Amino acid sequence: MEISFAARILAMPKNNGRLLFCSDCITKTGMRLPRHPSAALVTASMPNSRDLTNKDDNNGGVLEGQTSKGSGTTARGRRLLKVREEKRKREYDRLHNYPAWAKVLEDACKNDAELRAVLGDTIGNPELMRKRVEERVRRKGRDFQKSKTGSVLAFKVSFRDFNPLDSYIWFELYGSPSDRDVDLLGSVIQSWYIMGRIGAFNSSNLQLANSSMEYDPLYDADKGFKVMPSSFHDISDVEFQDNWGRIWVDLGTSDFFSIDILLNCLTVLSSEYVGIQQVIFGGRKIGDWEEGMTSPEYGYKFFKI
Image 1: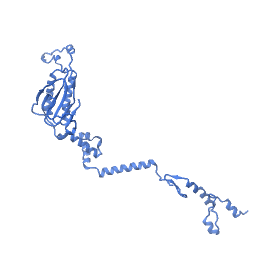
Image 2: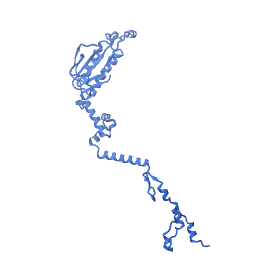
Image 3: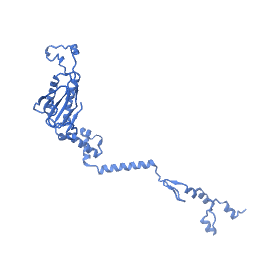
Image 4: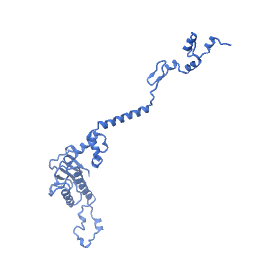
């Protein structure tokens, strides 16, 4: 039985109640006929215009009849891309804009442990490298490349109302001390203080001082144990302003021969390592010392006891 034309039209799939027509059918029959069933099925599987108008992409809604199209990348991918771009830019700047003097310093660090210690973790950052080097030069001052040697002359020793419980001891050097000089002199003072602190300067127990070592002298440990102990009470840090240095001391119950021991140490230190012009015991203001001037820019240095 032949199906009527109207029945065929009613049986065709529709899109939102509207029939879709095929241009081929119009050409062959001269009439506007619905699309072929295969074409209608394909069309029906696509989202309709009402659905498209209700969808939003990352930038807001889309126009009717348009489909949203993603960028094809994820947030993580975009971040990784940005990191790679920044890394390439830093590498380019390092190769094309890196100062020549910074490259020289980096190469020198390979064989110079002292320079490597000065630069530390600033290698690769020219601005921080420059600041580290400037700070090092400022602290060493004029003696940056000058090696310090001892003096062939004996230093002068004088006393000015010296109170062993509350007085300064002053040191006048031949020049502004380098960091090495500060460490050497400060270490001597620190060792002297530690010896006195644990009772080394006690003349009440000098059993071997006047004994002859030819006949195996005897030492009475019980006597040494029963002697009244003596102790160095307090000391300040070693301070320097240009070529002057000082410490404040409270010798406590230590005997005065502790001063002889200190001078013996300073004598060898002056002749072999750091030249000393004079040592003054006592006095509140010596030379051009200025109280409160503790800025390294004005030649101030110190050794922590």
